[in-house]
Amino acid sequence: MTDHGDGILADPDAAIAQRDAARAELDQARALLLTKSVSKWKHYKTGKTYVVLTVVIRESTQRVEVVYAPLGSSVNFVRPLSEWEEVVRHENKSIARFTRVK
View 1: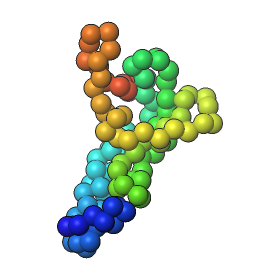
View 2: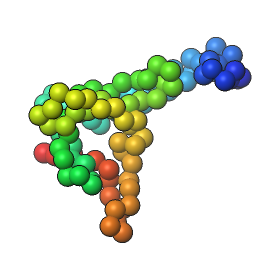
View 3: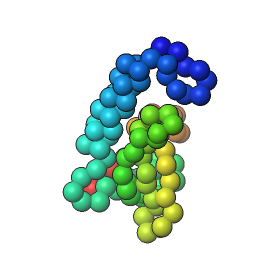
View 4: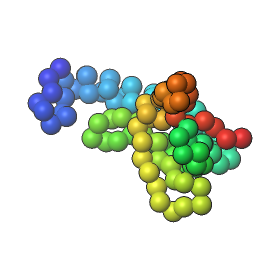
C-alpha cells in the first residue's frame, strides 16, 4: 500500500479495508452516542452541556467525528471520536472529556 502524500492509497484492497473499518467504527460510535432521545453530554472542564447531533466520517481522512452543539445554541462543532472518548488529566484526576447526562 502506497500513500502518495495526497491521502489516496495506491492499493484498492487496502482502501476498501480502510473504508470498511471506518464504517464499522461509525456504527460503533452511533451506538455509543445516539439514542432515540436527545443525547446530552457534559464537558469535564467547562461543565457546559452539549447535544450530540450525529456522528460522521470525514471523507478526506476516513476518521469518525462527532457533530455536537452547546445546549440551546445553533452553532455546531466537530471533534474526532477519539478525542470525544478521551480520558484526560484534570486537577490530578483521570476523567472522561465528556460524560453522558441523563
